[in-house]
Length: 133
Image (tube, rainbow, N blue to C red):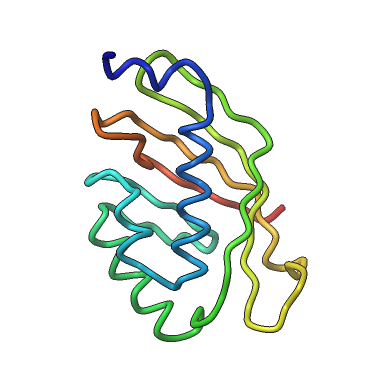
């Protein structure tokens, strides 16, 4: 089989989001960042901008050792679109829970857009952006 098998359905794309949620739950910045492309971009509320997998890794390492320690991520895909053989766009409802929380507070509810690209060995996050929901 060729690498184009990934285009037959969106399961592999959704698996990337599941893996990211699992990495966040483990507070594992390495596993989380490994799902990003080398040159990925991340845009967060408040004008926060990160460029590159290593910057994502550093940001989350510090966050998991500080204010996000013990937190878990919530990401529920609402729409997954494959764009040809090597790109996908996912729109999701997202947020994060701090230890002891059971529902995401309103001020942490987000709508996110993920752009994923195929890298021969799997899907990687090429760009991520979220805004208040």
